[in-house]
Length: 293
Figure 1 (cartoon, one colour):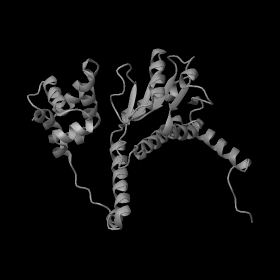
Figure 2 (spheres, rainbow, N blue to C red):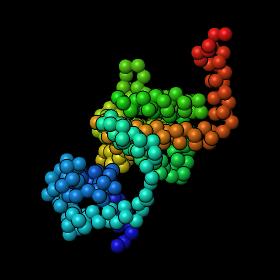
Figure 3 (cartoon, rainbow, N blue to C red):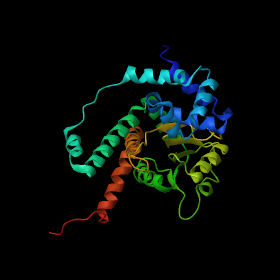
Figure 4 (cartoon, rainbow, N blue to C red):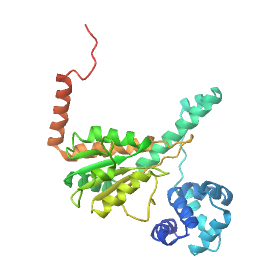
C-alpha cells in the first residue's frame, strides 16, 4: 500500500471541502479531525460518531474515488498499525481502576488527559511554532479572542504573554464584541482565535471579519476544517477528546505553555526585563499574600 495515501486523502478532503454537500462535509470534517478513530471503527460506529448514515459514508468513498468504504478506511487503518506503540499504564492509574466506580471514572479521565496532552504536543512542529512567534513579534497589534469556556484559555494566555508582547490585547473588552475591537485592525496586525467544536459563532464571525481586513489569523482549535469562508495563516491543532460531555482542554493548555516558552525565549532580553518589572511591581504593591510574623 502507498504509505502516503492517508495524507493524500486528507489533503483532498480539505481541498474539496467547499464543493461537498452538507452531509459529505460532515463526513470529511470527521475524517480529518479523527483519523485514528476512523481507522479503527466499523462503518456503523463511524456513522454514529459523525452523525450521518452509513449510506453517506459509502457515498463519500465513491466521491473520493474508492470502490468501497473499506477501501477508503484502509490507509487510515494501515497507518495505525505502522505507527502504534505499546505504552504501559502507570501503577497509580491501575490502582484507581480498582477503587470502585468513581475510581474507574477518574482513571478513564486521567488516561484520556495524558493521551490528549501527548497527541496535542506531538502535532506541533518547531517550524510552525517559529512561524507563529514571528507573526506575533512582527505585528503592530496582536489580539486574542475566545468565547464561553475557551475564554479562560485566552485570558490566561493574555495574562502571561502580554509581559513579553506589550501589543497583545484580549478582546472583547467590557460588554462589546470582538468585531468592535477589530474595527481599525489591518494587515499589520495579528488575531489569535481559540475555539473548539462546536465553534462559537462570535469567534468565527470575528475570524471572518479579521481576514477581510487583511489581519493575519492564528487559530488554536481541535479541527483543521473550521469554515469554508476563510483560511487561517496558522492552525495549531490540539486534541480535545473527553470522557465527559465537554471538551478536555489539557492538550490546549499544554500547547499554550509551549507557545509561551518559545515566545519569551524569542523575544529576548526586552521580554525578560518586562517580566522582571512586572514582578517588582507586584512585590512592591503587596500583590502576594504573606504570613504575618
